[in-house]
Image (cartoon, rainbow, N blue to C red; front, side):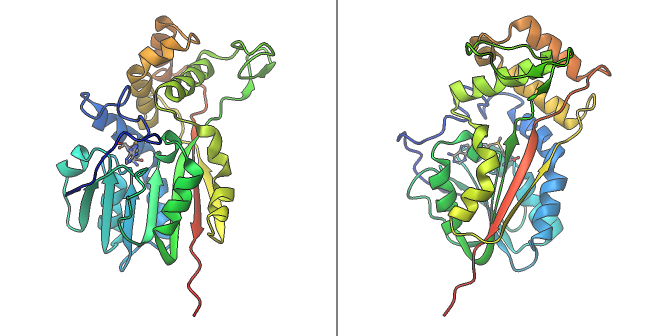
Length: 290
Ligand SMILES: C[S@@+](CC[C@H](N)C(=O)[O-])C[C@H]1O[C@@H](n2cnc3c(N)ncnc32)[C@H](O)[C@@H]1O
């Protein structure tokens, strides 16, 4: 393992500090619930893009490393450099071909080489300066290689039980009517914005941002895992709400009782709601012309 300086410069995301602290018991399991919900989709997409023997890959914000390991074990890529600002989970499960680097990807000195695949899932949405970061990640892709970004898309717009539009706020900017589930999701996004700086409003722009970073062609898809009682995605949201309960209460949008009720609802047959989706966008680095 190599250690790069972390730094407290402006631009550092605050993921893992106020919420989602890696040292808090169960944080690895929470990330793994998210991984279980999305890994099959991610790995299928990466393989369809050509990930396989001969590929050297970079997985930034690799978390517990489930994608890195499946790239090695299932896709048969030649090597994966898994980078995270906290590598404790990556070091717990070493496999041949997996290199681990502790680094902050917002650090301007983060230049770990060039790779056939650069992959970042559920990372950029938590970091400031996404446009610049996407350009910098594109620079790490070798000619002919691919940059693949996945992040959450909020799907809480819709209609309430009485058929009226379920909007985020009324004309005065105050909280609007919604289902208990949509209120919870909105409180969560607001809480993550307040504590970490998370902003998912950028995510639908990823194809355009990849194109702007000089990649072509670009494309994107969305996957929405079904919210079934006891499913990994339901357990992921329940855990996420539990861990961000204090900042969610601080938004004033929900109270303790509402959080408890929403967690019970997710695990019940009464649940009839739409999870946030995962948008995956990718773009190719043109081959160098001589
Ligand atoms: C939501 S988890 C996603 C983990 C993994 N990519 C996945 O999809 O299962 C976000 C990860 O990004 C890491 N992270 C956040 N900010 C980072 C930064 N500035 N540099 C490197 N890693 C960062 C966190 O430590 C965490 O492991």
